[in-house]
Length: 352
Image (cartoon, rainbow, N blue to C red):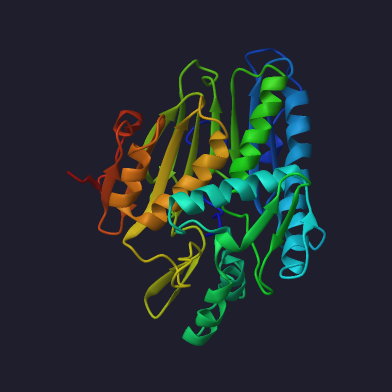
C-alpha cells in the first residue's frame, strides 16, 4: 500500500494563505507558522513560543532531507538505490530508512501481509495519482504479483544495508514516510521546548502538541469521503498530545466504467482494496513510541483488513483508537474513539 495525499480539513484557523503566515512575532502566545511543499504535498507547521522560528527552520530542513532519501521518484534517493539494486546486492542507506523498513516488516507480519511496502511494482503499474493512471490488464497485474512479499526484504541493521532479494522488486515508503517525518519534527519541537503547536504533513499525518492558542484541544475536521465541498466534514475530532492519520479511497483515484480505482492496493490481488471501506482515521496517544509512523501504518492496515478485523486489531493495542467509514455510510469505532468524535455528518450513522 502507498500513503495517500490526504485532504483532512483542519478546522482551526491554521489553513492560511502563504501571505498571511508570520514569523516575526516572538511573543509566547503568538504562533510561528510555515507552509511549504515537499513529499508531494503541502506541509503546514505551527509552533508557539520564543523558539518557534528556530523549531520551524530546523523542521523544514529535516523534511526536505527525508524527502530526498525516501522518495521513490528521486534517482539519488536511498529508496531508488535499493530498488535499482534489487536482486543484485545490498545497499547501505540512512538509519532512518532502515527504521522505516524494519517497522514495515513488523506490521506486515502482524497483518499477515495486508500491509506491505513491496507493492512498488503494482504502484508503478497503476500510476494512480499521476496523469498516466490506468487500469492494467489482468495479465499485467498477475505478472507483478510474484514480486510482492515483505519476507523478500533482507536487512543488515549492523551496517544499515538492505537488499531486495528478487530482481524487479521495489519498495514504496509512501505509506509510512510522512508519519515517520511527523515523529522527527516532534523531536525538534521538544528540543526547542515547544509545548503548543500543530504538525500537519499533508493533512493526513498530524500531531497536536499540547493545546491550541485558546487553551483548548485542537479540533480536526475529517473530510466527508464523498464530498469535495469546503466545510462538509464527516465529523470533528479533538486531540491534544496525540497523533492522527487518515487513509481514504477519495484522495487519489480515477473512475472507469462507473467503478472507482483508488491508490490503496491489495498486495494479494494487485487491485485496489475492495472491501466496502472508504476511509479510516486512527488516533494514537503521544505516549506511544513512534506515534506518527505507527498511525500511518495502522490507518492503511485497518483499511485493508476491513471494519471487523481492523477494529479487533486496534482494540488489542493500548492508547490507540480508530473509526472506519464504509461505503454504506456507516461508522464503526473502536473502544475510546467516540469520546473524541463529535458533529457526525447527517449522511452517516454509527453502526450498532
